Image (cartoon, rainbow, N blue to C red; front, side):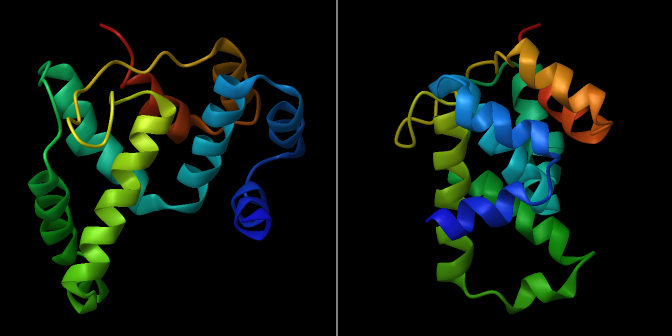
Length: 145
């Protein structure tokens, strides 16, 4: 587990590490989520397209088929995705939905009810200071309207 966390954090500047170790649970969770995004462009694209659209249209929840549809769409641009087994795709979707719950975008992974992301000002400032503009824009688009 520690190795996985360290690998995620390697993509972020040191001040993120400090906030992760010194911040409260919510702050640490948001920084860890930023680390996951910095390491996974597919997750960023899912947030920018499917989740942001659901937030803007005030959809009540996300459905598992939305992850599957997203992967099918991305498979046209990245043929490697077509080689992933159905169980791998399903497991990835479960992990993504669990992450969305942990960061506060969904109430729980069973009901998948959406709620806006209340991005902490400290996280927003770190993203801006270190010019992680795509991540900042992605997360800001998921906030309250």
